[in-house]
Length: 238
Image (cartoon, rainbow, N blue to C red; front, side):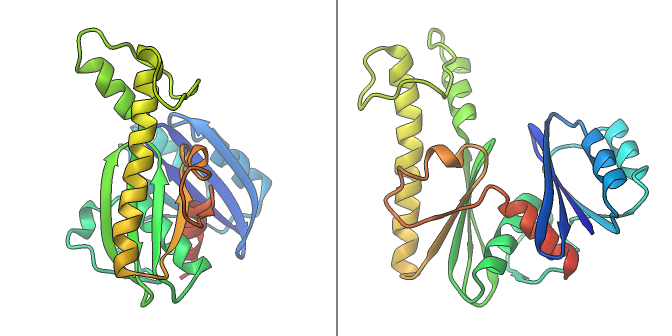
């Protein structure tokens, strides 16, 4: 069995796979990797792959190294089942790479856009030939809300969850609607420009904030919260 781990800026996500089937999933805030030991003890884990977009703390590294299974860190030198055309592969977020691998494994031979809505919002394109072309990065919802608060004198820090009228009727709803509508229009705009180039483009949506937007996007989309983990499993099996 495979253990796949995605260490992000705010959470650790881990899953156990038997072949292509995900048999267990856990998520913890911060860099709490105690869940990994629990999974290794519960299942017959042969190999583990780790993707990290955060700076891993020393104690976290020690816990990972003591898991007692073969461990591989996803880097720019890891063999891939796709072709990476990114000009600076060493700077490419490994979660972005795993996301497009997961999408292409699900829909091989198709032009695909992967939108991952986490701390940042990333847009990544892989073409029908299995060539990863690159994409865009923009601030995530919480980051936008914090920026409005931190970069102004009087605007409050607003929670992303709450009432979202068509237009804001007070400062709180004005900020919330402005941020969420801005993200929605950004997504729709990016999709529209790419469909001109790729008329049969398939769209995958993932990430913690993505599920609030799946019904707002006026396109057919595939929503998969485990896309990055599935991609990591595919890379480990390559």
